[in-house]
Length: 334
Ligand SMILES: Nc1ncnc2c1ncn2[C@@H]1O[C@H](COP(=O)(O)OP(=O)(O)O)[C@@H](O)[C@H]1O
Ligand SMILES: [Mg+2]
Image 1 (cartoon, rainbow, N blue to C red):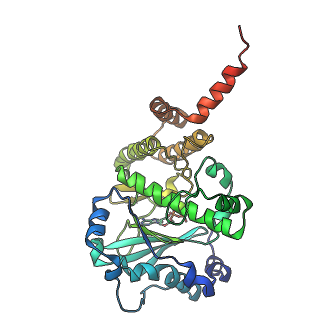
Image 2: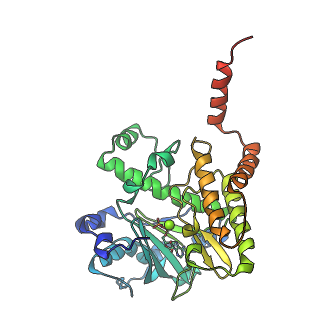
Image 3: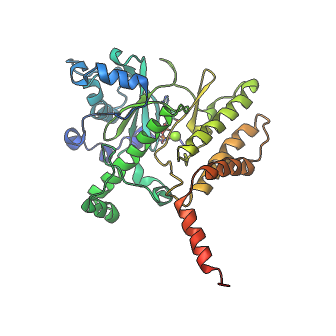
């Protein structure tokens, strides 16, 4: 991956310091959690009373620009008692920065990962129409946008419309993580989100975050088991009507023999997206390619087809029915 200079990551235009305070909404708790931990946490804690009275003075702040980001986007989570410190930056990239934070003791966790999106990142997504096809738009609270004025702003690409698109991508990531973690898939559990930020379970320890599969050489004896585990996760996702859409060894973390699949904003739902199969097949291919270097020879096309056929046996995809209807109508009458 190309190295990006810090001043490219945190440019002034992204930060908009004078607008930050009102742009930051209060953190939203993940409400419809399937997670026993989050539910218990919510029942027993009122976040308003948990936050520290003391000023937020994180250990890690980075450069002057990055400091503004951290203070701007993470202070609300400090004040409402999710995190008590920012320990280090796990990764900074073109799309998001992820930080390792010390969790507030009331969360019962030791550390929390905070993913802060670059404000303009979703506008840079290449080919994003392919992933948006058939999607509902979600507002900053994760509710479906139905208002015709809002839909018009989105279609027109006005400034507000772009902000709404941005919120929608982020909410899609949150909801996908929520759905899949509830089903027992190997994904980090989401805890809370804000306008530009998702807090989720962190993989790693106090010094090092979990590397991606791309960054490790797996012990040979673990390779087959992990390959099967990733494929099983792909199957669980598909039966939950989700195709990752950017799955590769870069988006699978590895920690102490366990994996976690991350990075879901572009995930697609095959029930609404006609391109879901080619997107799915590419995900499977990339995973198979990675495991080939461990001597695992599988036919990615056959693997993808097998999983897809099992899924298709269980659901009816409306757009495929439409296509069949059109074909039927074209048949010459006897
Ligand atoms: N829950 C997590 N725990 C530990 N590290 C994480 C976590 N989520 C993301 N990361 C790290 O941050 C990087 C970027 O996160 P990702 O969701 O893939 O965003 P991007 O869109 O920038 O690729 C990942 O490659 C990984 O190194
Ligand atoms: Mg990624």
